[in-house]
Length: 544
RNA sequence: GCGGGCGUAGCUCAAUGGUAGAGCGCCAGCCUUCCAAGCUGGCUGUUGUGGGUUCGAGUCCCAUCGCCCGCUCCA
Image 1 (cartoon, rainbow, N blue to C red):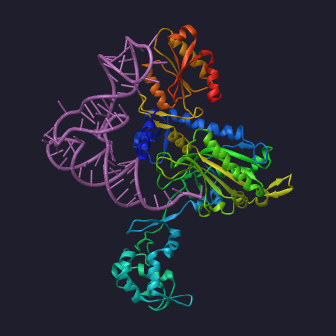
Image 2 (cartoon, chains in turn purple, blue):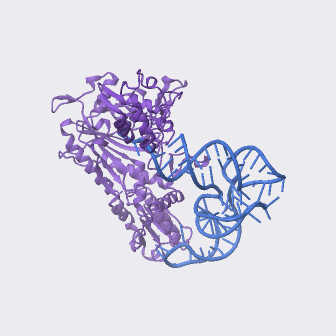
Image 3 (cartoon, rainbow, N blue to C red):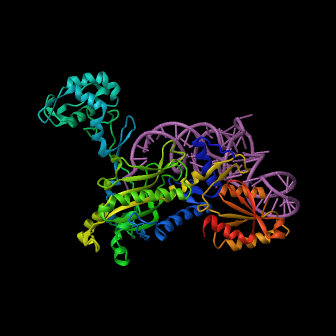
């Protein structure tokens, strides 16, 4: 049947509309006009998400695969609190690294991280051009030629740095002495002093100014972007009571590392798994649920001996990539991509690497968006906590087999549950003008929110009773739906939009020979099946 | 945070400054023997919110909130 591929923007729009219409995903607080970056899962969405999380937990914690060493992989679970002692976030680096002050240019409106402005300035074309024109090396700095600078400002500077004070005024704005802290125009200056000088107007407030790397314009004061949500524990709302909602679930695992090794019989290598909410106050939530401020992570910290990092890293990259394929992301829209050196996080610089499992979403097309990151985090986090909590060496793991005491390294496969759901939705969405609904959601049967629809062909002649009985028999094992209302076509159409892979229909023939029809969602084919074999049929297709 | 766009029924959209409507959907009943058929009836709105102008505002003005797009951010 024809699968028409709509333009990507149109496809996303239709998918969002379907999610709302059929009860997959609603905007949070819609009743009050909504709230940006927060989403609610409806009756179908919660089943889909639950199927995803259950599959993850089952395939990684209950029945993990065999590792590269030939031994069964061992993973145990935890479920940690969302709010933790503030010192956790100081130790992990989030309290500083997650709080980047930003500055904005008042002229060209560009936004920069305050700590990056000078690096950007040194690389800026207009700064290089200006320096070449008016600075000559002298001692530890430069001699500054004010006349050459003014000349540049009246010519090339007009195009290269239209926001710069020197360009807008051309008359030297400030005596160099005031801006540069030196005593004369030809004094030895640094690049920084020269830039302060050309960027500052006479009588300007907060002088001296640092110019905008883009246009030379005036930058605002640094402003804090709160990337972690603050909250206050206890009755009194003061600084001592302040902590954060966790921005990742991983720190709960690290903070419990010793509890787990002390209370279970796990031995390295082993993993600790957790599924839970995390919170990031993103500057710009965008693209439906892809970048939300409240989201759910599925994370494993897999603890290993440092010498085995490379093989475990490769193992987890491959295992996780194959897992996403196994639940239905089989198209070329899924890929595994190794990070370049520059992309690596602060904690992963020394490690075996980081890879992303990425999905080509309609809104990232032709690019890809991250679904899961597999990172070698080295022993960064355990060391940080060992130092911060005062336990130090005592937090080291004692490896009996190796007779060695060490901080284990971790390989971290960290997946986004909401992004996973979104990828499943995007992959399943299929326009099909050939069928009444016009669209069908082709979920993998294991992920489908409703596994089967059970219908009497018409609402009489004893058919509803047979359907009802079958429904009650199946629902203890699978999420199935029984529907007797309206004509059969409407009921099939609704099941297509919900992505239900199978429908069982009781008809006249059922009354005489105890068979019913199975209708396949993807092919629209039908075949007859004895009622007694329905359970075996579903177990075969879906698993129990 | 900045700039631009947009807010009318669950959805798609009408309504010259003059009584807020249609189609679809949804619900109930009848009907219906395999793909949103038909008939009858029903449901749905503080026109995002609050001010202002006006005899009268969905429509004009101001403010505010929210959403979308771009800039930016995303360990």
